[in-house]
Image 1 (cartoon, one colour):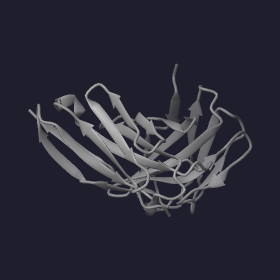
Image 2 (cartoon, rainbow over the protein chains, first blue to last red):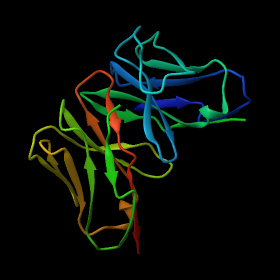
Image 3 (cartoon, each protein chain N blue to C red):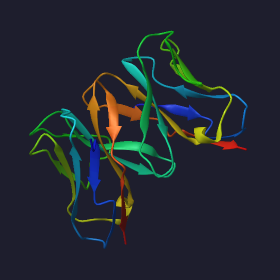
Image 4 (cartoon, chains in turn blue, cyan):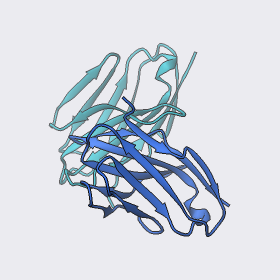
Length: 110
Length: 112
């Protein structure tokens, strides 16, 4: 049972490049989330989804897009990466509010 | 933006000692208060979900209390062990679809 899996785990980008982070969960959860974690800032919600085909903005959505074409997958895209997007990104799915997290994806934008 | 505060930010405790730390959160629109344990290089894992004022939860040597009227929760660790070293996150839920608002965490280091 894999739980929540994030790919890639590490990535280095140049400013202006694009990329997509993939989150996959095998627990049949409806709700999925993308957070970013920065030193001294805690976990901040970027976007979330309450079911297949739905997405909504969180606290810090600017510069990111998301898609939930399949229930098990939640994609986070950066269209034009900026150094301010250097962070560790965590995906989570939830069951009755309890969050199950992936292991994180460390993104560096040069 | 909701304000969820945790104190202290970091804490060094001798092995065998007991310790506690605090989470404060808005007392209005409360639905649940969560505690997560986050070990270095791993992902956060749920410890407790608390919903009722006065609630107390326990898991081994770790326990938590909840006061929703005044907006705080305490996490207690009895007889600290090195494996308790981690960051402890609390998170507030107003019951909305946007999930949890996290505090910045208390980084606990247990010294042998």
